[in-house]
Image 1 (tube, rainbow, N blue to C red):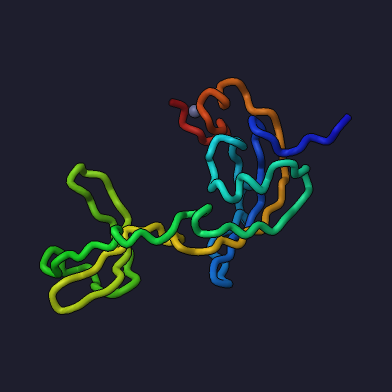
Image 2 (image 1 turned 135 degrees about the horizontal axis):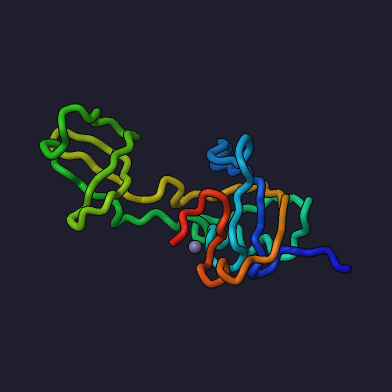
Length: 163
Ligand code: ZN
């Protein structure tokens, strides 16, 4: 019998580390492996594409360019806001992360990019936008997705609130 390999419609369990600019920014170590449905766009496309054909136990380094990861930096995602609109308890310093509600009431995440006397420049880009992603991945489990998972386009594991 042929060994199962990562294909569309398989549920993949993946251990991974992610380095950006030489720094560890994310890892499955110390927790459960990442579980996702291959071919459903559950993970970033540049990583998903590289997993096809891998067997359980196989590991690999995958370098994902920004455009295949979290996208390029969007210059339109920088917004200047008058200082007076910020509550006094928020420290107005570059790098501080904030949650902001838009006009529709949705919560958006932003980082303070720059501060001057009049205004604060907020950056709404994903923190990893514009970055090359260096993954080390290991496939630790593979199974066929259920019909329901295929229909929903994602994995139903423990803790999945059904919908
Ligand atoms: Zn579901």
